[in-house]
Length: 105
Image (cartoon, rainbow, N blue to C red; front, top):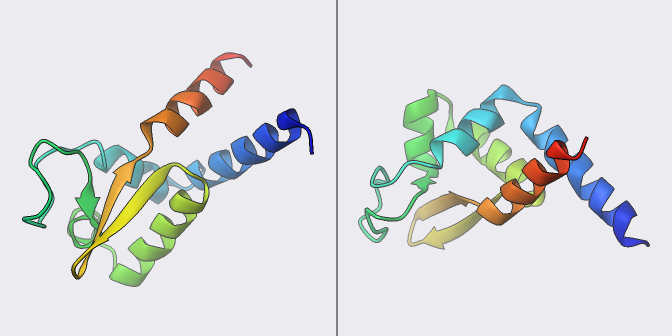
């Protein structure tokens, strides 16, 4: 498969993921630093745990987990299990590439 086709498929996946207002809000919230409830995350690190997203969005854990999974599959965020916490952070490189792609339109 040519690189352009792979790139276009990834961009399609990312745009579909960001088409949902809740997912756009999650990506926006993940810019926050020092707001994660997990003591094992440095206050200097951006990102939040799923429980923090629940509180900020007023949605249930299964709903947040669903949205996080879609964003992760699109490569827009990464997650890391820390004990019982699921820590989420933005993939700035992927977001920058998507922005560059959009600027070329």
